[in-house]
Amino acid sequence: MKKTTIYLTLSVIVLLCFTGCGGGKNHGTESRKQVDKTSAVDLHISDDKVIDTINSCSNLQVSKELSVKLPSKKTSVYQYTADYNFDVDMKDYDSEFREMFRYLFPDHSMNENHLLYSGGSSKLEYDDETGELVQDYNKVKDWKDQILSGKEGRVYYIYDDTWNENMTEWKPSVCLELGNPIGYGYGTVNKGKTVALNGSKVENDDTHEKVYPGLDGYDPSAYLEYVASYSPDSTEKYQLEDRKIAVCDAVKFLEKYINSLPGAGDKTAKTVVTEVDVYRVTKNIYGYNMITTKEYEGIPFDYMRAGEYEGRLGYDKYSSLIGNAFMVESKDVDIIDGFYLKENAVNRTNLSEIISLESAIKSVSSQMTEHIKFKVNEIELVYAQQFARTKNGYIDTEHSSAKITPAWKITLENTNDEMTYVCYLDAADGQNYRYAMIPTKWWKGNGK
Image (tube, rainbow, N blue to C red; front, side):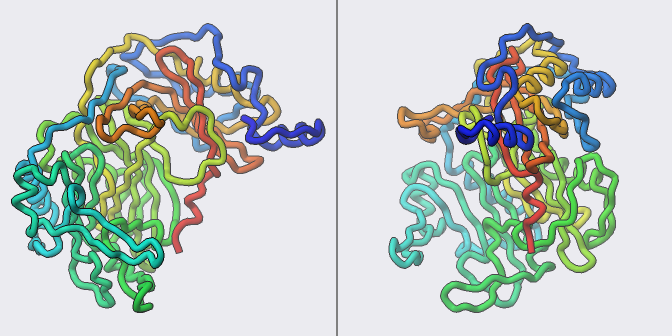
């Protein structure tokens, strides 16, 4: 997996000994070996079989943290097109947004002065030289007739009590931002509990006063101290604001909470937790930051933490999902950034067979350099998505659709250079090898 060409033979040998670069016997080409296939309905495989397969590959080793994530029940595996072209009735959206607000914030009255919208004639504009805001979003109350009649087109609402408030003293505030239509991923909820408990402030660029951060776009990992990461089934317990609760119990609560949200009609997808990061909110209070993705009929969509990629091969053609939700109380969710309740699948094909997990492991092994051993940290079956693009290569936002295909995702770690290789193969035929290379657990350094 060469990032650069090195001409000195000695340098090449040294590089291969310490990195995953350079490739295996078939690096840079599609593997055309005969692959074994398995039922796409029952994907169960024993732990011993997985371990034996990994150990049979000279350049792989079983990590102590190895996690194999497969559907727990018999399930169908599909290839399909996700159609995201929608005719939206703005009256319905307005009603659903307000219903969601009442559900999430039952003790908080909506201030119509804090309800804005994006789209149509409403947008943010900044001065090119000074960077100062010269045009803010329109208020819904001032444009309601144009919005509900459809003259403004498809817009989405932003409610934020902290918008441009620059609060030096905290007062009860909430934030709700929902994509249109609701339930297809884009959405932000912030009840303000974490911000209030933590008390961190930022400097206002204009007044240089210390003010509370705004709720829209608030990222707990940027303000809180990172503690540890766990799998969703971990029984480790931490003290939240009200009591201690196990990670696994918090995950169950969160998934039920999000997947029970109103305003999305018939639900055809779910939000599921993939990992849990623990952060310190105060000296004695912790919070769970849960990494989430979409699940469609038992199989999760590919997810990737945001960060810098050191190298890629074919990965740029695909789009990963990433969401998160934060709990600082055992019986409530304080922050949600992205949630999935809907999937519009068309042209769906049910696969009766996919390549076996054993074949996928061996195929990925053949793509890696033979000079070092990679730790196998995680193995998953995921849905990968390729969004339709314009002639210029950009994702088509006017006529949005995506090709959805199942893929084996195998995450390897090279301890020599502290890099992680996230490798993929199309599950239907074992072809289309691709990868993304990222620093191992880079997020541990986040927070204050």
